[in-house]
Amino acid sequence: MYIICAVVAASLYAFSPLIWLYATHAEVFSLNNLFICGLIFLTLKFASSPTPTTAFVGAFWCGLSLTNQHTSIFFILPIVLWVLFVGRRFLLPYRIPHLIVCFGLGLIPYLYLFVAARIAPPGSWGDTSNGRASFTTS
Image (cartoon, rainbow, N blue to C red; front, top):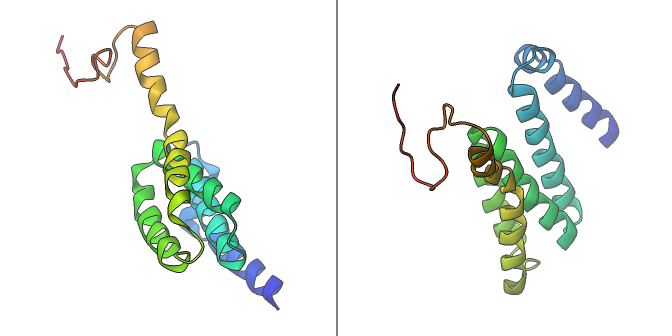
């Protein structure tokens, strides 16, 4: 019965008009859909059997999804609050720093902006070599 419900739910999501449109066109939304589906999958996996590995991968996936689309925060905040509430017996205080590190590792693609600023000429991001937003007009 669970398998049938899962297939129906996945099909309704995958073939809904807006999701189908964004998944079949070259836009950033298809990658965002992948990250959101991954967040939902990891949340359900954590709900069924909470393990440290699932929590660490979930924290990494949350950070990585924020590097693609900032609207992911609308999924991440409720999930994080739910995981902290449900997993309060499971997520012991010494695991919280590990979760923060995993989340930070997911944000590593942002470092590429600073590396690329030193290699490539300034573009639409402005001068990112010093970490301040100093845009020049030409």
